[in-house]
Image (cartoon, rainbow, N blue to C red; front, side):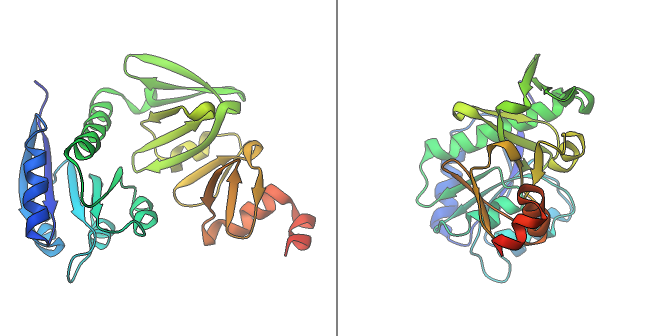
Length: 247
């Protein structure tokens, strides 16, 4: 059996903390390091422990789950749980691998934890050299389980950061995961075809169907343009003359 996934869970609502722990007992090969009643308590544990996974409520007194995630000295996988949907953008901005809305169901939590297990297994079995390999100006290879999978640049809609990983969203709704950071893949992608639009997203410029001052559209998919990336994105996509008319 593989090494257990270690985790810390934090929720200031006792009933949800207990319920989530009960659901987690349904998942094999997990090891709870600590069940905390606040992010402050979890942060104290994290000074001496480095779990594989954090399962965090967002709204907690003194220190929120997102604030805790931003303060960490290393990058565990993070699943956020919240009673509200409007924190989702902030959650994924700190590379959360999933975002669950209360009341959660056991099957939804199990799915999130198994996603974490997949990513951890990838990290343990794939080397950095194997994870992403450019193949000229038209395609690249990623390591997927025991095979190298070729992906044409033309088939990529956009890429999304997951910390040390990226989600690669393809046409026809297909998705792949690669063990490479968004920063590293940005340096290897052809700038003529791809543009970084935020801390968490790179898009295929050829797939952009519309753009305004804050967002781009890839047909029905809407993505936010980061404030610090806005000018560069507008210039890259529209050109100088188009920007003046656009403004």
